[in-house]
Image (cartoon, rainbow, N blue to C red; front, top):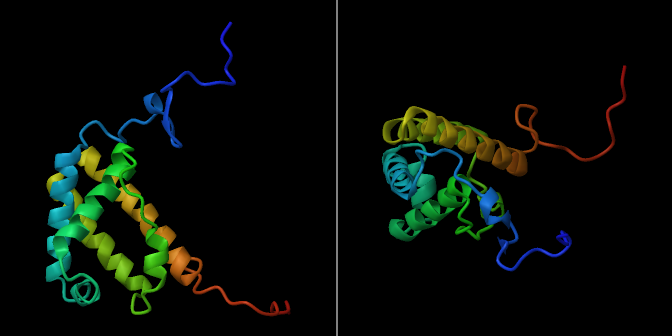
Length: 158
């Protein structure tokens, strides 16, 4: 009889669970596709009249940022665990970012994903990006679509 309370050595590679359960979100996503997506997308960002000033004010050397984003997307889609950052904390400090910026970010991301990835893989990237953008909008601005959360006495019903 096997004691399931104690995992076998090397059964768990890290705190994400058994390595056997960590599979890429789509078989056509690999590191090469991720690199192509990141480079294409951030090339668009650097040329975009709305987003370029926001990113350009914070990023002096793009290559380290691109590498970080490749690690991020590798962690999200390939379950590699390479990205160790806390992006919400950084983004919450950006007082010049507005909800509409996320809409533009998503539009450019969708273009890039569909340009560099197979159709189903592109939709996986896009779904992940939409969820991430929604989380950021919620964390930075309150409930998406409902405006910012305000604290204080509740309004009385008529």
